[in-house]
Image (cartoon, rainbow, N blue to C red; front, side):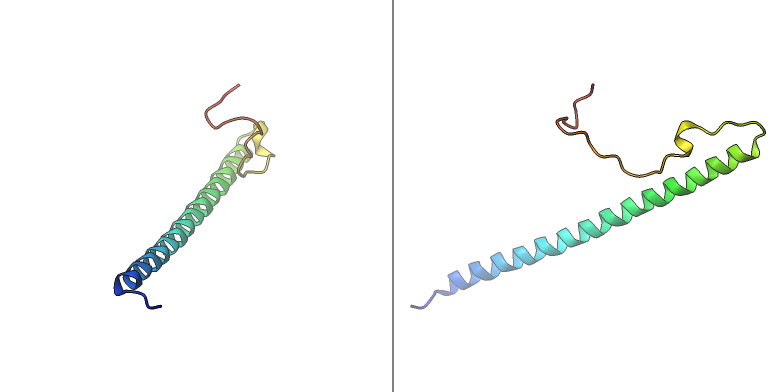
Length: 85
């Protein structure tokens, strides 16, 4: 059984579309990770500046968050993004 040229064209177009989607997905993930790392770096830099400023002030009390590690919070189970308590 032989396939017509239109079948070959459809398969080639589908394969090309999958390759483009895979490439775009990889690029988007790379960009997302770079932005996430930049945010973490900026947070660490600002935290260090705040701690240094607090250390310069005589009698300054460190804030509650000064000793907590920075990072992303996990969402609580059973709550939707828009729901609040």
